[in-house]
Amino acid sequence: MSRLRNPLLGRALLVALGLSLLLPLLLATLVYTEAGGRWVLARAAAFTSGRLMLEGVSGRLAGPLTLDRVVWSGEGVVVTARNV
Image 1 (spheres, one colour):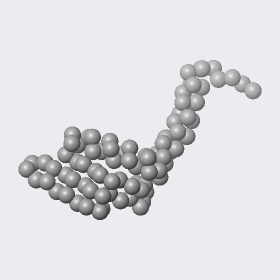
Image 2: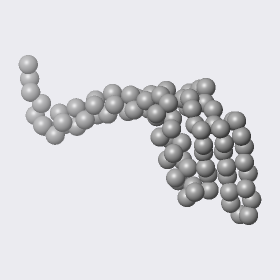
Image 3: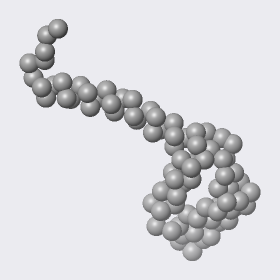
Image 4: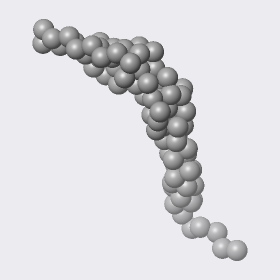
């Protein structure tokens, strides 16, 4: 069996292979688990600097997903939705 002449190329291939296996697993965890969905929605709410508030999140992003209360506030307007 021949060895790679460039060890950096071999490492790069291993990293690419590892990422190609880990990224779909991470995405599936975020979309298909309740904990992953809560994490994504918490990051989305934090990204809005407090304008978006989500309460009573249950379910998966892939569905079914329910929220007891969603509140968006900004520019003098507050929108509230319940049992979404």
